Length: 193
Image (cartoon, rainbow, N blue to C red):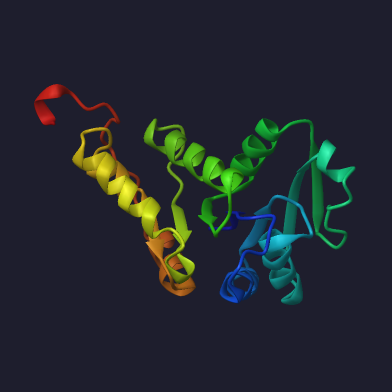
């Protein structure tokens, strides 16, 4: 993996561990010569992950919609800042630039970005590893929901397993490096439920 896109909150959250781990992830990526692609902002966990990579002299590519640049949240010290016209363009560009995705804690935007990448993978549009750094169990309820989707016949277990989860950065990166995308289709017929 040469580049990883990180989706995460533009807020810092209520637990110090969120910011600490975001910065540690950025540092780890830089130390492993993996470029960071992220949302381009200097605030919240987005700013922390970028700062972590920059501290270790890593390459950091930000992708920011023009309307957010005008709010003065663009990070000023990135290797490259790519400006786009919309949120949809932002996700498309971040996908084009990366070899894998990691989600940190975040809100609606983070969840939407994560699930769009999972959906694209499920449909066979890419075969990239997608991981969650589950800091302090932040995503436990989401993981329970995915289990419910499987149990109720809306998601194949093999597709659920596309989402790699760990609370440890090294373990998560190792899972991503060894990931093999499923070869089955997404559709569930009545006979298999």
